[in-house]
Length: 302
Image (cartoon, rainbow, N blue to C red; front, side):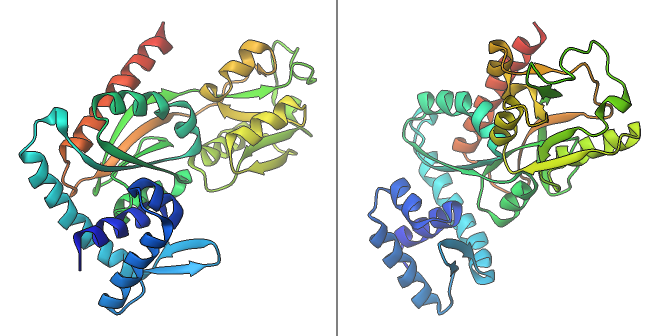
């Protein structure tokens, strides 16, 4: 069992894609495939299930990853102990939902890369409701989630910024010109929302149920961009965080409805496993995220 095979296995487990793992490791895809096959042959068990084009960890693969992650963390710790923090190297895996990936994390990535260009960053876009599991599985070092206050005995969770959610429509929508809205104004309307299971969709449903609003048609989507484009086209009322529509509101493609969503407190959270060794790489990334979000918080309150 070779060290490079273990590193390759960890990268494939993080990306769940041989080609993306090969890119991250500067290998050709066939080399990655050969290393994983050799590792599976030596262990005598499959580490991944190949379900068509989809790659998933087997139960054995998940158990193996937990131990391998610990071994590689210790090696990183030993390696970094003989270098200055300015020269830290290694691999960092970050997961987040698509909203935070597009609108919060690019600036964090840019700052971190400027400080530590030798660190290999692997990013995975993961549905919000699956992010915690990536920490338990060891397939992510740090995750970012949109959710209400999170309490966990196994995860360290840090709320970074409260996110404002609003209802948005095209400027020619019948409700766009009304200065005040009543509950009955929503009857018969089409609401463009995330799929059930998404934490802020659950909070949205709870808010409308408290108001007693019914007789609504819901169109469900997997991502914010689809919701936004359908709202711009006049299909219905979009439920979205403000950060996703700032440009469209400024251009006049969308307008916010004068409606307060009660009991809706959603935060951008940063989280990691409490039992995970926080290497200099991880600590530096956490600090970069705090710095960037602190600036965004200041800009939000100005």
